Length: 457
Image (cartoon, rainbow, N blue to C red; front, side, top):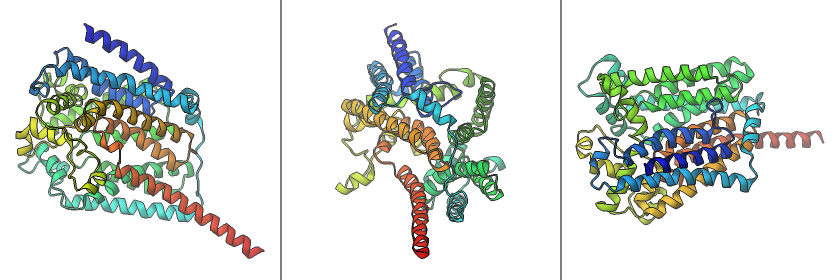
């Protein structure tokens, strides 16, 4: 009963602070903070935390814990995040004079400006990047031993879908940076920018470019049979349509999308994982439901248990390689180490890779309980500063699509790890690339204008 009382009180407080910090928790007006609340915290983490703490989860991962006390330790650790994270968001808003409700609603209504709309240089540079990203997709397909989605659709091969997916990820024979940056990360973002320009200019060249990038984005987000990437890409696309004023979210649309997504998810479980037992789909601790409310948070409890009782603390070994390589230290990701410890048989047969979970787990594995406290404060400050910055930046296709990219990818990263918030090479390169393009064309225009003025004088 105590766990339930604490859970309810903290949930109410969390809703209050998230609402104040974001400006809206309405499903009809989603934003970065509201997606973090609903997806990263409430659904993926907090519901399962209560089930685990009260001992009614009966979940296969939690059954691998060696000390039951980490049920309540984990509960209070996640509860701490659920309360302190939005409190920090709220505090940052107050310190920066950010009025969430007023500024977010104003941003939604703001007209989109189109810098360099008539400049062929921008379209040529953008087209070049698009060709590069589409070529990277083709390169990814060629360097993948077996393309999982193709193998499943054609019904051939002796490997299971799980083995095919792991082979595609770990048996990739090409350059990982080309695949991860130019194919997986850049293509969807380029497609969103192209969509905004196609809508606002109504030019055929932008429409053709968008269709090519959209098809490439669908392929690269589904080729390895991963279930979540394609859903997140479609969410980004819907958000773009909302933010440019081409769509209004309504309760009916939300319901239709929810039903469609559920049917698609069930279909994926049947086709990809071979799950046909009806009870697996309706049970709270198996199938899609168990995947949503328990699979993402259970590894946090395993982290607390293992790194307190049997595994040595990483003491910074999990930090980004760009930092620790300077000291000749090899990076160790806790999510991989926990998977190897808890499910060695799955690692051995090639069906499992990592046990990603709420970011505090990796922070704990590296720095103990102080890592949970400082990590929560740091990530919350970073998230809110990004949110405020994007809302106050000019609403042009580049900044808008970067905003939407982070609106979807930050919540995903929160339940993926901590060190990506210290340094994320993909985020850094993407922001640097797009901002660099804007600055290059602006500088070129300014230099040309100065030269023309000198010629006239």
